[in-house]
Image (tube, rainbow over all chains, first blue to last red; front, side):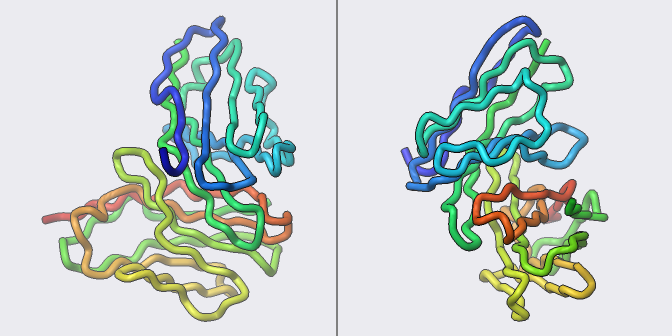
Length: 113
Length: 117
């Protein structure tokens, strides 16, 4: 595997379910990010992890819970979501130096019923 | 907070022609980075080109070039010799240089580029 991978690619869940999104980067980066892409809004930054430490939480509701066990893996735990949380969730990674490019995964398309 | 504005929801260009996508941004910072990303129907975000704010020279990558006007806070993307594979959503993005390197990107709403054969 190369680059940034995300699983699952598609997810349908009820509002009472608990699910997790997984992101893995194979680029040797040490910063990882979660973004949300909704149909009618710009991509929104959700969380930033820098060397496994969360450095930014962009006012995200607590029903989204990130976890970064190491520099290569990032999870987004979901529980009691709302239909308006349906979106494409994108993971990205980068080096933490200078102006390094963020590399994105293919995203997880989430539908909350 | 920084904002990024892309005023063209959709643009159409004939194959082999040149097209320019507009982007303006608002910031009080003097040092930052600007990016153009491409998102084809596969949804994979791909970096097209990037610019450091302290560099006056406009970045170029093969058929892609930017017109960076720092005073006007403008960062347009020019695609020369447009190809069918260029059809995608194009996003302009801003990243602060003050956060130590792990800053999130602020995106515009995107421009849908259509290539007419």
